[in-house]
Amino acid sequence: QKEVEQDPGPLSVPEGAIVSLNCTYSNSAFQYFMWYRQYSRKGPELLMYTYSSGNKEDGRFTAQVDKSSKYISLFIRDSQPSDSATYLCAMSPFGSNTGNQFYFGTGTSLTVIP
Amino acid sequence: GAGVSQSPRYKVAKRGQDVALRCDPISGHVSLFWYQQALGQGPEFLTYFQNEAQLDKSGLPSDRFFAERPEGSVSTLKIQRTQQEDSAVYLCASSLTTQYFGPGTRLLVL
Image (cartoon, rainbow over all chains, first blue to last red):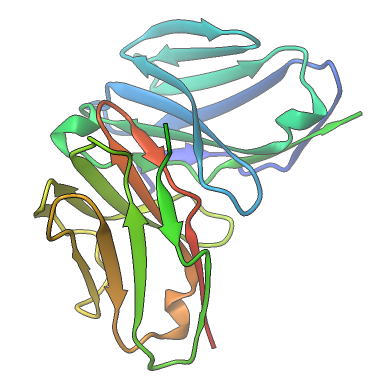
C-alpha cells in the first residue's frame, strides 16, 4: 500500500464548476500538506501549503486537511480552462528545511471544458 | 527572481550510455532534492542535499545512480550504464520551507 493514495481520474468538468480533488494517507506523522499543479511537460508548481488540520483559502482555491480521517482536499471554485492540469498532493512529517522528502500522490488529471 | 533550472530538458540515450543531468537551484536555497517521475505517476524521492552534504540517498534505485553538489549550489545527477527502466522525468527541487521544482529533464533510454 502506498503512503499516499490519489484517484488518477481523469476528471472532466464544465467551465465554472466547483472541482473537488482528494488524497488519503496512512502515515499519521504527516503534518505538512501541499498541493501542486503540473502542466504537461512542466515541473510541479506549488499551489497550497498547509500545516496540520484546518482550512486555507487562496483566491479560487481552498485546501482542507482532516488529520483524524487522514484525508486532504483541494477545492477549485469557478473552474477555468486554464486550470486544466494534473494536480498532485504531497505531504511530509516535517518541513523540507529539515531534509524530509515529500511523499506524492499519483496526481489527478483535470480537464475544464469551455 | 529566477526559479530552479534544469538541463538538458530532453535527453535520448542508448542503453548502456552514461548521462549527466544538471540542476541550478534557487539562489540561497540550501536544500536540494532529486525526484524521479515515471509516466502517469507522482514524483518519487531519490536523494537530498543540504549544502554540499548528501544527507539522504535512500531513494537511489541502484549503484548506477550518483548525485553530487560539490560547492553547495549546482547539482548533477549521473546515471551510469543507462537501462530502459531509467526512462522517466528527473525533477530537481530546492527548498527553504517548501519545495520549488524545476521543469525536469525528460530521459528516454532506447
